[in-house]
Length: 110
Length: 97
Length: 328
Picture (tube, rainbow over the protein chains, first blue to last red):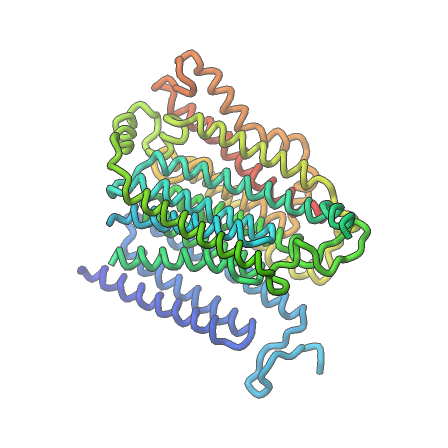
């Protein structure tokens, strides 16, 4: 394996670790907002690392730019969907989870 | 066993899943899902079987490509019919009741 | 290593399909089905079929998922009767309500036994099949020089088996006519009111749609052009166009979608008409859709351009007709 291959492998593994962390967060976090945080942050970083890892293997500049474009599009879509889910949850009165008051509350009840 | 044959066998299992779902589930949306699972199974059999010797075969691939488009057309028509039935198809029940 | 990945992927495919059919919650079932579609795209990539992987991700998971999620709102919950009364429970909404009676148990068991037997018989037939007498990939490779394109799947789609594609486009068009005819009856008493709160939440998707729509046009053009020599072509390009239209519609930026003018209506049939015109023009060759070799490349590009437009419009039309039926 050449130096570039090692760099690729490291970035791919780091990306996979972010995906794993995001998935664990999605399954284990207590409410919709924290789960969105886990999903959006970790998946975007994970995809970013994987794209960087793959950039070292790209044959041409065009292929490399396409990979970066894929990442940017996924970022834009992920941000929009996260916003929509969080907005909808807030409109339905779901309050963000707090460690001192566990359980689902409504933010419009005081 | 080649990857093609492996996926063809998975396609046979998916087809059987779809048939079971089509018979056992009563909700129309679920029947449409089952129908799509059957379709995916058939596509996997078609392409997987064509490539059991390991070389890519463009003929079944092209057929499955058209098949995917036909299956979304069928799905859309089925959804339209299911909605129509739901909105207007209760006359019989009302007579029975 | 590859075998381990294949087995894992197949297990995930079977699991997601099985759960989509058995989970009690319909919303969960639809989401699992979308997951199943994405896993299918991975399976196609593993099977050396990037063309199908592209189409499956865009059409099988993307557009079908959008159709199903939209239908969920209309097909779930209590049945709304014509009189406006809400029936608490009828055949369509009483999935899994109450324990089934004895004959139902027996018949369900019989259905499962039959489905398992069908699966085993299919698997047995696949394993016992003799070697194919002719090698299709070799036949295709031998005829590639005369096909006018350099990508085998495109050559099969639009040259060697062009009549399949011709009929398929006709089927797609007929399906849209069927959907328009069936969904055309408006549900009574549903107003197109968008609440003020929902309008505020549209700002972000609107921005996304404004950025993505031109980019989708560019990608569609690229896929169309690339289809001649690498994975891509009219179906994938059309699916990307349709996705852009669906996104614009969801963001409320496609006011013309509800009442299409004649240009849009003509666009629906344009691809089929171009295809038929080319087929009629080359009838003199003796065989249906056999192009003169010198013209093959240009004719295929002409047909594919028409098809991209029409497939995009028709797929978008399927979604707009189904989701718009309740909004007007």
